Length: 250
Ligand SMILES: Nc1ncnc2c1ncn2[C@@H]1O[C@H](COP(=O)(O)OP(=O)(O)O)[C@@H](O)[C@H]1O
Ligand SMILES: [Mg+2]
Image 1 (tube, rainbow, N blue to C red):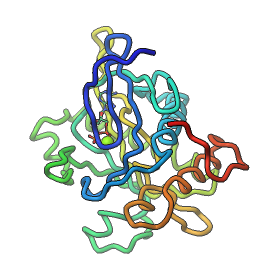
Image 2 (cartoon, protein in one colour):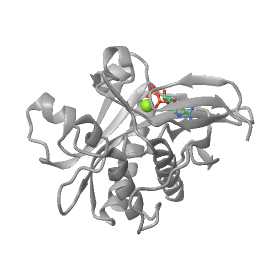
Image 3 (cartoon, rainbow, N blue to C red):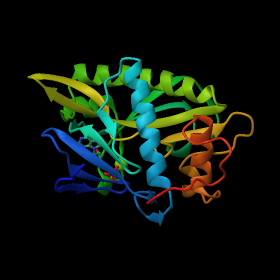
Image 4 (cartoon, rainbow, N blue to C red):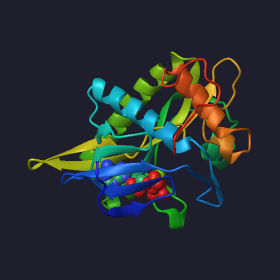
């Protein structure tokens, strides 16, 4: 499928105009960044794996009735999606304290929360994506009250789905972040899950051993990131069981 003009080059993906109006092609890069791009590397195979993960999870969410931007995967590195107007928020759901929450509140990583916690941060790299309250979102008109309520309910449904999917393969979903967009079709606007869902945007711990199988492997120099992501992919049936390191075409 012919790619149109480049629209945006981000840290993990490049966006191109798609073949039809209202579509875009997401190209998943091998670039890994952390701490607001202070730490950077190129990790062979990461883009192809995340393309596959995102396809898998978006299709799963569609299957339980949650609308997403996903149309179809085109090849190893690219997928076709519906173009949306991204709500400028990262919607974070936490089941267990870790990362920035542990740091900010002095709570030991691994502390179980007695209910899932939904947090929002304002999507702005130059500000370091600061945590914001629902009051900020409404006062600054980043979303309406109706949208906010819907985003929380969508995020919790994603949490139920992803936690269940991961638990079934021996992995604990500690937390994740999603982006949500406004999709306008036939004069009707709805909120849909956009961007990507992959181990770049989740914390995944092996239930038995506690081993980290997500981007923290890169952030904290805990080993080979592709090996960790491949392990998750194998357990989900996205890679053959008997492969060690997958042969991925660039
Ligand atoms: N369906 C979509 N329509 C429009 N923009 C999208 C869609 N899905 C994701 N995006 C945006 O595309 C960009 C994806 O590239 P990424 O490398 O993740 O960027 P960033 O460095 O900003 O995180 C993000 O800014 C994301 O908000
Ligand atoms: Mg991103």
